[in-house]
Amino acid sequence: MYGEEISDPLIYVEITPRNKRVDIGESLKLNVEGIYTSKTVPISGDWFKVEGNQENRIDDCRNTETCEVEYETPGLKLVKTSVLADEELTDFVRIRVEK
Image (cartoon, rainbow, N blue to C red; front, side, top):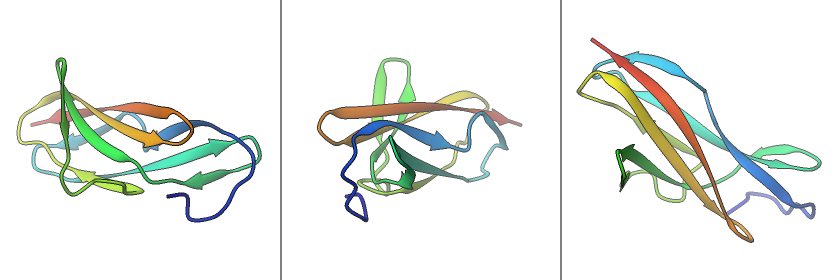
């Protein structure tokens, strides 16, 4: 899951890029990194599109370091990643989809 053995604890995970704007139908590649006490490295997670209280898993983005998302409607969208380490760590990113 981590690509390399790291002995220090995983503190949190972070999706990049943050707060992006895209056009309808334009895809955006997101990455997730694990932030350890000694370094930052790519890490695998499951990805979800969040709409209201509903989390919809993105089928092509299961246990992956990257995920491409695309939207067909304008508005402020939310994407979540979930990484299972000693505990579940999550991060969210907002994407503004414009006409």
